Length: 206
Image 1 (tube, rainbow, N blue to C red):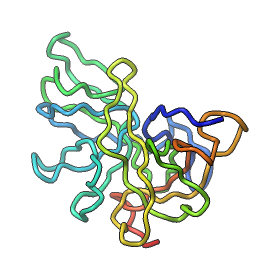
Image 2 (cartoon, helix red, strand yellow):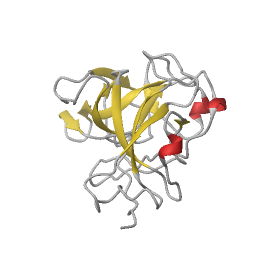
Image 3 (cartoon, helix red, strand yellow):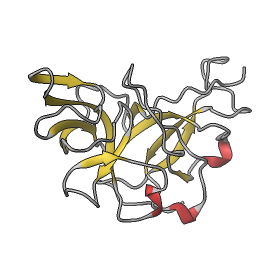
Image 4 (spheres, rainbow, N blue to C red):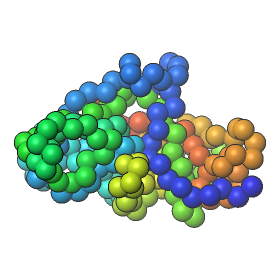
């Protein structure tokens, strides 16, 4: 069955040493500047801001991996902030880009050994020959303001010139047979990737 495109960002599949437990994963608190108007969704890749206030995280965009100055921190899984409109602290699975008084506490899975399930981008089929190659996200996505879920997907992996790309493809998802994402003959299949270039992990050549 042909795969149906429905990006969901990066969902933790496990770690290099076993299956994940989100409550025990490295969900480290970082900061989003209250003035950051770009929404960040559950499952988005984030990095430190290198052009604005230092020390804050921002959404990763396509082509950020083309430079060694932009380093992925991890995957965003929610935030907490004082809501200006509601006059109370709120928790949200995505940062809407406004309504915070003061800095936003962003929860990031920053385990350098985490493994991630992600969908190949529109028009991209990732096969056995791509294992071990590095990849960036596809063109800048838009998540859902209804569900808060990311719209990120994985761009086509490339060879050794992409050492600064954030991810390395390590496996393919082929089960259960007939499920969405398991058809390796059509675009939009599901793959497992590991961090290649990450805050706590040195970049690796192919």
